[in-house]
Image 1 (cartoon, rainbow, N blue to C red):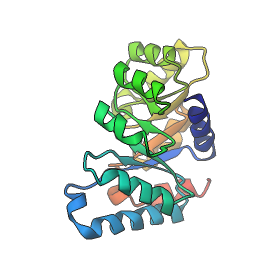
Image 2 (image 1 turned 30 degrees about the horizontal axis):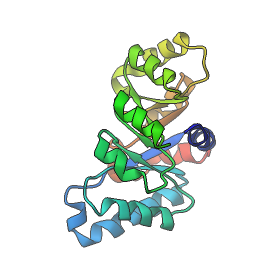
Image 3 (image 1 turned 90 degrees about the horizontal axis):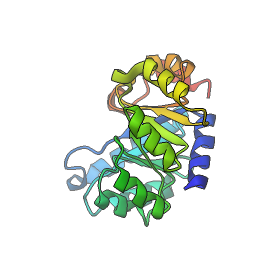
Length: 211
């Protein structure tokens, strides 16, 4: 897991942004949605986005979708969002995923992920879970939701630990706030629902030109 953590940190230091895409309802029942998704990813790549996270889905076809995506977009660092159950954890074991994330801290999930050498970054919203995550060996944590926890919480975490922890912020982040959050303690940020149709707006376009 340490190698995967180091590799992700290296990738996010090059470009401190992850765009998360969640599959639409009935995605696997509509033939054109897969190609629409690939076109969306290609467009993000053309804008310069380097890290994309795909929401986990219980559909049996989901694993094949991720494999196709990895094969087609070799320049994109593809991860998985919303690993919250044993089922979701088991489904990524054979996919050689670089990283995945959970919206909250679930010790059982993280212990099993470590055992399987799967990087499942824990979502953190309080000091207690932060301490537990560090004790498990995490050098990366996700602060969620940033829209509620803001800058004061990240300062509190920085003051709490002397260890070199990489902080990813997620939840309600708008592209116009990227610079401010990165200047105030966050090392990387996730943007998703606030980015309409996962298409870069003018603020994100300008930000991406620096990377």
